[in-house]
Structures are given as structure tokens and as C-alpha cells.
Image 1 (tube, one colour):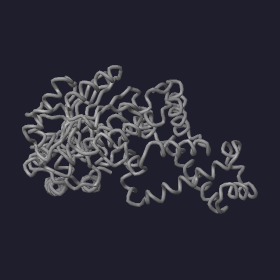
Image 2: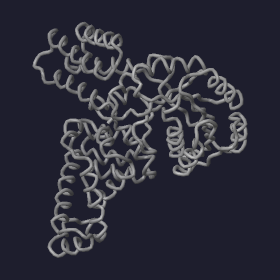
Image 3: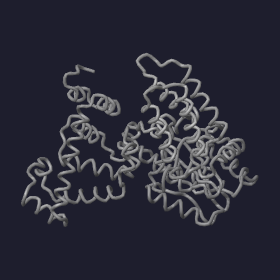
Image 4: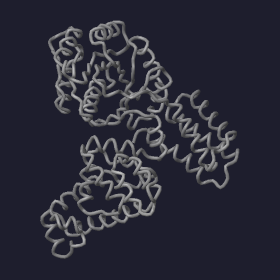
Length: 456
């Protein structure tokens, strides 16, 4: 998870609030100190930390909770709002036809991020063309070509041409029919005059709708000055922070860039081509605090699975308590397509409390084995798992190349999952939250999931 250390510290702060019998001035003072420590350890600027915690203390003491809200809920809401305010929100990249120019220094992950961005737009059904205009770094074009091949986007470039402007002009003409055209430009070890001149010359020809600066989040608070310098030099319209997974300086980079005029549009959160997250301060903080991000989970599912009807069928069975091995199989296949299990779990509300107890690598391996076992079952067996006993277990185990006890283990897991789905269907708050996320479902179907609740 992004900023895992900070997330744990912030959740400890909230647990301290929720576990207290009385919210008084002394507790607020202790909580703000814990909040300060958590943010400073995440490399957030001292002045920003002091400003934020002073605001939390003042609002927690002086503001009255809204009607129907407890003092604990009020203090939690104040912390949430102040953290969101620290990061700010910028407009996301639109899906309209556009030309995007990628800029940045060497070693920031610019070319890799170009491939990830292409994948992001392709998943939205938009055609993409990539232009390799880095004429200085050896093998830059080849790297981009391989990334383009991986995601399914054509690449234009000429390793023998040293005129970046000419490459861009020719590339734009070649990809005139593409909805999205992304230009990967050269970098330098520092923001030098010749780099600024080249970027300006390319921009004059390309007239890009977006100038995206790619920054390595490991530079921490120095990300702010770098973003500011590029912004003044070439009018940066957005920033992508890379390597946000597992870096102690990510909080510093994130908050530092947010205080400049540049908007953060994406976070690079891993090495896989899909590991690019659209940045939204509200949803980002919600996940850090363990409140989940069901909207983000649904968006990933819709992009990766691709069939909205399948999503609705899965949600219908989850919410109604009807759950077969076919549903379990479909969910496993969806999880595999959607990416790392740990990331998906972090998007579920409250799962942070059990996250540390889960061996994600072992769980992923077990899911793969379960899929093989279910491939050895008949359709009727998957529809009616209660039929699977005795000789059927032995036959399925033989066909899957596993021991019979592993088939029984799968059935036990299925029964546990079925019970959990049943409890979700009876939990009014959770059901309503899930229904809100799957708002495109047929109203009559939603109504059928709420027996006795009228049309609400």
C-alpha cells in the first residue's frame, strides 16, 4: 500500500480517539502530538505539519459537532478534512482527444510512466499513439517501443534522428487519427538551459494540451522546488509522482508538490504497467485512514473485467446472500485481472484491522490452486457445492493433481465466504454503501435486495 507506515500511524491516532471514553482537551493535545509525529516521520514539511495540527486542535476544541454526530465522529472528520486540505485536489486528465507532453529529469521514470499512461487511456477505450522524442539517452526508443508493444499502442521514433522537433512533427502527422498522442521527451541530470529550449521548441510544434512533469517521490520535499522550477520554465500543467510504493519520503513529495501551483494527476505505485493511480485527495486519505475506497475498487473492476453486466451479477449475488462456487470462481478470476491482492484489500473499508494478519503471497498462490481445483469440477457441482462429497472429492483431486484434503479446504473456504456474503446482505450500512457504488444497477434489482425497506 502507498505510504503504508503513515497509514498505520494515522489509523492508530483514530483508534486512540475511538477507544477513549471521554474526548477532552488533554486527549486532543495528545492526539495532535501523535499526528505531528506521524506526518514528520513521513517527511512532510515541519511548517505544514504545525499548521495542520494547530488547525486540528483549534477545530476539535472550538467547533461544535454537526447534528447527529458524536464528538468522536467530529474529531475524526476534522482530521480527515485537514489531511485532504493539505494535499488539495486538481482536475483529473480528461478523456477528450489530446496531445500530452511528458517532461522531467533523468532517472525519474518518465518513459515507463509514458507506457503506464498509454495503458490507462487504452483501458478507457481510447486509441493511443506514442512518440519517442528522447534523442540523447541510448535505447530510449527501444524501451518505449517495448512498452508500446506490451500495452498495444503503436510507437513512432527514429533512433538515428537527432532532431527531436522533427521526430515530434512527423510523429504527430503519423498519429493524426489517434485520440491520445503522448510525447516522451529527453531529460537531463539538472534543469539546464538546453533542456528548457528543447521542451519549448517541441511545445511550439506540438501545442500540447497537457505538459506532465514526472517526479521521483524519493526526492521527498525537494519535489516541491523541482515542480516549481519546471512549472516556471515550461508551464507544467500536471505532475505524476513515481515510486510512491514503499518510500518513506512519499509524504514529503506529495505534500510538497501539492503546495505549488502544479496539480498532481497520478501516482506511480509499482513496477507493473497497471500500477498508475489517478490521484484524488479525498479517496487517497480515505484509504490511508482505513475507510476504504469502494469507488476506486469498482472503477478498477470495470476497466479490468470489462463487462459491466458481470459486475452487476457478482454484486447481486453478494448482496442477496446467494453464492455458488461459480461466483467464487468469477471473483477469483476478477481479482487476478485487477492486480495485487494487497492493493485491492486496502480499498475495502475496515480491512486495515486484519491486513497485517494476511500473508498476501501465500493467499495469491492458494487462489491459483483453488481455480485449478474448480476447473476439475462439473458445472452442476459448481452450481450445487453440497453435492461434492466422498468419491466426487477424490475424482476432483485426481483431476486437479492435488490431495483430497485440499479440495475439502476449498469447500471449507467456500462455506466461510458464503456465510460472510450472507452477513453482508444483512448489514444495512454495508449494503447501502455497496449499492451506492454500484449505482448503475437496475432499480428493481436493488429493491429486491432490500426486502421490507420500500423503495429506499
